[in-house]
Image (cartoon, rainbow, N blue to C red; front, side, top):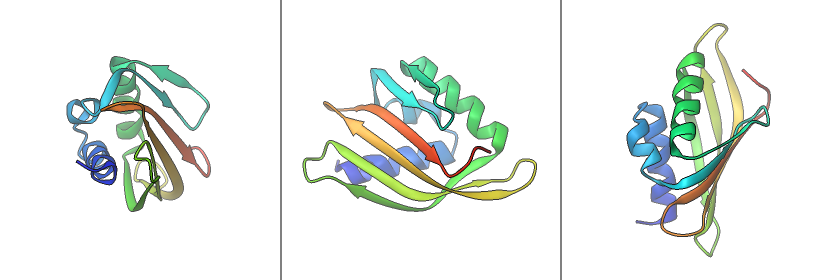
Length: 115
């Protein structure tokens, strides 16, 4: 599977709240960097953090453009995070996926402002 396809699969899993499929794309000691500067490490922490964050804001990733490097180790998503909870908003976002082997080793989520 291409890196572009893996990233698209990860976004799809997040939007469908299928966290078991999502974490299946990551190494056991993967890191997640959140917009507030918090970093979590490990599949359980990654899953639990996103499983709390996304539903709390009723957030979905939309209007995504996936870009990958020539080496197939890094990819970025430029898109929008739509938030339906509370006051609805659409925030520009960037997600950076990094690989060191077969699975992702790091995900960094950047938002224009915190929800």
